[in-house]
Amino acid sequence: MENLTASFSQESLGGTPLILTKHNKGFWQVTFDNAPLNLFNPEMLSGLELIVAEMQNNPDLRVIVFDSAIKDYFIAHFDIFRGAEILGKKTKSGLAPWFDVAKALFDSPVISIALIRGRTRGVGIEFAAACDMRFASREKAIFGQFEVGVSTIPGGGSMEFLPLLVGRSRALEIIIGADDFDADTAERYGLVNRTLPDAELNVFVYKLALRISRFDRSITGKAKTMINARTPAPNMADMNESRSVFIASNLRPERKPVSQKLLAWGIQQDGDFERNLGSYLAKIGDDISK
Image 1 (cartoon, rainbow, N blue to C red):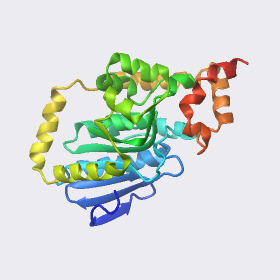
Image 2 (spheres, rainbow, N blue to C red; image 1 turned 60 degrees about the vertical axis):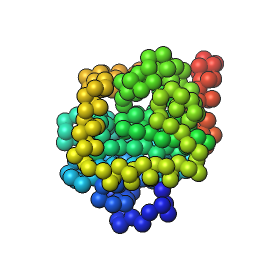
Image 3 (cartoon, helix red, strand yellow; image 1 turned 180 degrees about the vertical axis):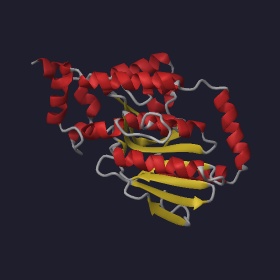
């Protein structure tokens, strides 16, 4: 959201690929800058944990916007090469890694907004879904929940969040279909609040966040708490079960040919596979069976 306001402070969160900009006491912006793909790796998780800690200890903060410095990727997906580092990490909350961040975003009186531009797949959708609001570039946002297509299941919250956001039938389509879909479809299904022309997205989200930052925090927080109480919430026991099945699915020997095919196609490289992942998965079964 550059050039929209004169922020009074900006800092990299020590050793992590997150940049924190404080536009005013009530409005913070967190930018993912983990080139080339914005993979969800241990450093990104550590940065989110730091943000959550600061968010919980700041009585003036009203709204926080998450965006990306990488134009083609909001969050590409989980870093499969470093998954064990994330899954085995101990958290102060005692909850599983990432779930503590998702729960903190949901429970906090601070309003969280995802400004989505670029590819948003796997845990990228799960992060966006954990935020209170989501706004996407009509031309440049691409979504995909591809885990079933690579012989596992989502283990970071989509099994729980997506049915609440888009309904059962569309959650089945997104998760089991495992294909990419565009921003207008995401809006129509209820995954994002709305799409906007890319040239208007930053200004719209900035103005909304700035507006919220000027309201009475006790009232914005109370309104969120009351809405949460009147809305079905993801069940932590269900999320833990999904995480366990995700881990078990990845460890099956039958999945080895799938992993080999993903490596051959160029997973976690900024190339044609990562840019067009959904279309590749249409042929993954045929290729593996040969």
